[in-house]
Each structure stands twice: as C-alpha cells, then as structure tokens.
Image (cartoon, rainbow, N blue to C red; front, top):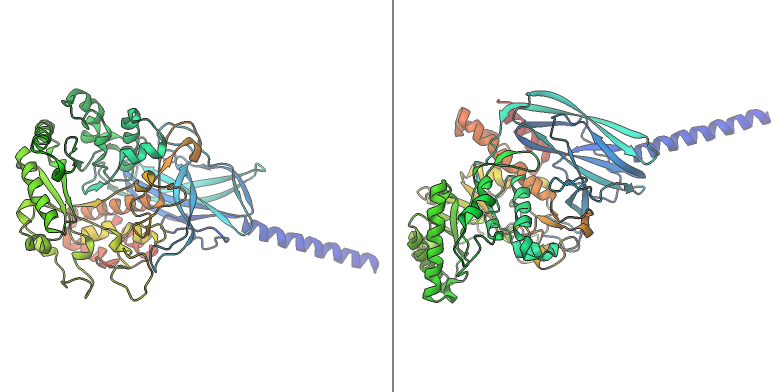
Length: 561
C-alpha cells in the first residue's frame, strides 16, 4: 500500500512536471505575425495568425514579425534565403515609452517603433540585436524584411524560420510567400517629398559637417528603400549648397545615379528621386534679403535649371515658396518670391501649402504652380471647416497637385476631448495609432487622384531632443520624426547609420499598394480599380481600420495578375 501511494505521488509529480513543461513551452513559443499588427510588450502574445501567408509582387519589399514569448533566451534567427542575393533582414523592435497620448485614439505606455538591424545594409556591421532575453509573461518582437527580386518566379514559396535558443536548441516555424505575376516599378510613379535636415542629422550623430554628404546619402538610400524621396537631401552636398559656382562635374559624380537609377544597399536596382527642392544658399528668407542677394539667388537657380534641363531632371525641381500662408504679409511674400523664382525660369515650380479657396480670396492662385492642400480641406468633415463638401474638383485644371497631412490629423490642441472629432480618425503617422492608420494615406491619394505627397520632416527630433526616448512634438508621438540616429552608442557597431521606424515600413507598404492600383488601372482602367479600393476607403477620413480587410483587398488586386 505504501509503495502504491509512493507510485501515485511519483506519477502525479511527473504529470505536474509535464503540464508545467507544456505551459512553459507555450509561454516560450515563437509566433509569426504579419506586419499590420503593432505588438506591444507586457504580456504573452497569443493571437497568432494561423498558417501565416504573405503576398507580394515582384520587385517589392514584404515584411513579417517574429514574436518571442518569454521566458526565453534567444541567440539568433536563421531564415531561408529564398531569393539568392537578398537575405532576409532581421531587426529588433525598440520600444519607446510614450507619456502623453497623441489623441483620444492613442495610448500611453511602451510602443514598438525603431528597428535596429542585426546586420546593417550600409556598412555590413553587426549591431546590438542578439542575444535577446525575454522575461516571463512578456514578449519581444523581431521585424523581418524580405525582398522579392523582379526576376523571381511567380508562385508559392515556403520559408523556414529557425529561432536559435541559448541552450543551442531551436524552435522552427514556417510561413508561405505567394508571389504575384506582376512587377512593381523600381522608380516610384507617385511623387513624394519628405523633409530632411542634414543639420539635425549631424547634430544627433555628433558628426563634423565635412561628413554631411556621406551621412545625407545614407538617409536618401534609406528613404528610397521605403519608396519615398528626401528632395531636400541634396542640400547635404556642399557642392550645390554653396555661394560659389557649382562644380557640376562633382555634383554629377555624387548624384547622377539618384536621378537616373540607383542600386540601393538592399532591394531595388533603379530607384530614382521623384522630387528635388531648390537650395536657398544665398537667400533662405526672402523678406530679409536685399536686392543684390536676391539676384544672386536667382542667378544660382538659373544655373541649376539650365543644368537640370540638360540632364532631363528639370521636372523634379520646385521651390518651397510658402508654407501655410495666413497673414496678408505672408501672401505678399508668396507673390514676391514667386516672381523671383519665375525670373530664374518661367517653368520652375512654385510650391505653396494652401487650399484653393483661401488662395483665391487672396488673389494668389496665379502665383502657385505646385498646389499642396491639406488633406482635411479636400473633403472636410461636415461642420469642421467654413466650407462643407468634396472640393477635389477645384483642382481639376491645375497641372501639379500634391497634398499633405499635419497635426490636424491627430489634433493640434494637445488634449483628448471625445467630442472633438474634427481632428480624429484621419490617416496619420503617429506611433500610438494603428498600423492601418499609418499605411492608408496612399489609398486616399489614389482615391482622390493626387500626384504626390508632401511631409514636413522625417528627423525633426534629432535636432531638438533625444528621439530614442522622446518623439513627442506638435501634440503627436512621432510628428516629424520617422527615423532614429543609429550611433554606435545607440545601436552598436563602429559607424553611424540611419534607423528606420515601423511607421516608415507602413508608409513604404502604402506606396507599394499605390503601384498595385496604378498597374491594375493600366490593365483594366481606373473605374475597375475603385471598387477594390472602396472596400477599405470611403473618403479621406473614413476607412476600415482593420488589417485583415486591407490585406485581403490587396491580395484580391494582386490576384488580378
């Protein structure tokens, strides 16, 4: 009897150990997830997308996530290199602690954003990613970028993911990649101009101005790998940002490939800038310059225009002439500077961020070439502006039409008032908003037939605060900051590199969605594309904030090929 009781005790103990082992195995599991889910730490992540399937065109970047549930000690990750020469890029998601929500739709606490690469693509250096230690009842996430080359075969691929643990065992997961029979263009067909300050970048990276060109071009490369253009980045080159005569031989050596087709550090071969902002080496603030200085600036613009015409790049040039004019003096500044720009060349584009109604009220419409209205005033929410309705048709006869978003997409007032719905629910690029919200702007751009998008900055915080701990500005988390300074102190290695954010990935994916729309339009016509789009987007402030719906619609479009 005593032995039988002892046997039962041993059996029960073994059962408990087995149950605990199963529980610990589940808690330490590896979960594969698509890119449109922001995975926050603080709990075991259990909502795995069953049998993860990714869909991609050729010449497209596609991403997924590896969620590590603790307790877990990870030494590395091995992922099949399905396409020779394009190994999957693994990144550790860095969490930033938000102390103020962007608006009522946002939330404080830890959020994933910066993506530290295991091996960077600029200098091929190992950075501080592994080992990764995950505490019990917590998770940490890895981000993986894939690139499907233009010569890939369409069809189905199986990708194996091996997570190597500190005890040298591994956990294996598999996912499926389906490649559509379509090739995205290497040069984006949709114009973008995302602001960039080389001065803020140099400050954050603690580098000498003599290194401005090398650092600036790393940021340009990072942007092009995310399908956006930093049209202001040529100002990082002292060859053109100068009061001396421009050495066009040196400029050509530095920038020719960026205008004619650049092989990027990872992925695309043949990427091109889609815009180029005129430098203002002589006269940044025209109202403060004397006539001689203004004419020196005009002379430089003439020289740039002439050279760009010989190269076939002239259509990319524009002058950022006036930003959001409101006062009579600002409208006068627009008119005055516009005249000087057109004195340099009548076909140079004058850019102004304003809406048609206000420009007409100030007799300024004839001074603007590149119109950039704010998204909130193309089709404003009812009762939220002095006009109601869809005003896209007001711009039907303008030659160049972009648009932009601002703090009006999350609330410039810096407070959460549930009754204040005018500035909530728009597309925006805040950290504490959903991935769909970050991605949907390009869907809106296609719906309203826009030619391009302007955004004011990708690295504002680098010049004024430590973006690794604080990216709050203009009452939003991440307003004006989409990159992080990858110093050796911050990310390891010995060289300085730009670090992308998760939001930049979502912007990239949205711009690649735009190429899907445009390729299908070429095949079937715009009228056949809009019904697909309208399963997700109704107008510029109404969209289904659901990752599954967006991904299914994108899959349906890709299946047309």
